[in-house]
Amino acid sequence: MNGAETRLYHAVRRIRRVEEVIAEIYPSDKIRSPVHLSIGQEAVAVGVCDVLGRDDVVAMTYRGHAAYLAKGGDLKAMMAELYGKATGSAGGRGGSMHLISMDHYVLGGSAVVATSIPVAVGYAFALKKEKKNRVVACYFGDGATEEGAFYESINFSSLHALPILFVCENNGFAIHQPLEDRWATPDVCKRVEAFGIPAEQIVSGDIFDIRNAAQSAVAQMKSKSDGPHFLECHTYRWREHVGPNEDYQSGYRDRADASAWFDNDPVEQLGKTLAADVRVKIDYEIESEIKEALQFAEQSPFPDESELEANVFAV
Ligand SMILES: Cc1ncc(C[n+]2csc(CCOP(=O)(O)OP(=O)(O)O)c2C)c(N)n1
Image (cartoon, rainbow, N blue to C red; front, side, top):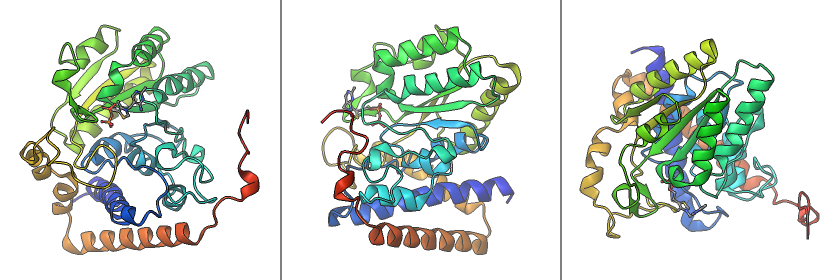
């Protein structure tokens, strides 16, 4: 056992339990927004964020709980946001898909596929102009690579040698559509390399493989200012596209397809490397933190009616 395993176990287990609890609460209707759970995909968020510095930046999608938490976003503010409360990370206005924490350099998520990518590139452009030795890690799904904004963004970032790590969380589906029905050619890394960007595919789902690849990319961006890097991380979404349930009965995929990913579960794999008492202690701390965050969300007030038109540009 070493420090990295303990730290990574804490991070993946915390995200897993937070999302399992969200799924349990969801039928009560206390959560006021759609939820896109990343149960099964935690290793990508944690493996990359583990090598980022405090003032490096993360951009993410509507499936953003894991990246928000992995980068240090506050759990109480996240739960309150899901409950639509005034103490939420976006004052209760955004819900699960629009988490934000500028204190931790987590740019706000967006419900519109691929739209956080150009925003992340803009942030990286600003960092470069200001000669800050910081990087942006930009998460998005395989579906987002089909949008024009993705190609405009990788072209611009390569042209200007921007410090941005593109992280494609390839879970094989855009809602219910598999890659085979969507991609003319199967290798997104080759498409990205055509823009002069080094690209690496990680098919194992292993958190250390992801972390090592991210570490090397971030180190090169910081020491050589060599421009963007791209990681394609294969992963698997265990629950339905949106909502708290499994959907293996719905016809577009089989539970058997997921079994290798269940066997390869980073939470279990990392947990096994820890001494039993260490694991129990971490698990206990996580449950206590979640309980407190839920209490905070439950007890927080809804935004005041007078706030209804705040931040609205036109009524
Ligand atoms: C521009 C746009 N087109 C379509 C949608 C509807 N939509 C929401 S999620 C999604 C699938 C995106 O898949 P992917 O990028 O692979 O991310 P995942 O949901 O698998 O994490 C689609 C098509 C949308 N929100 N925005």
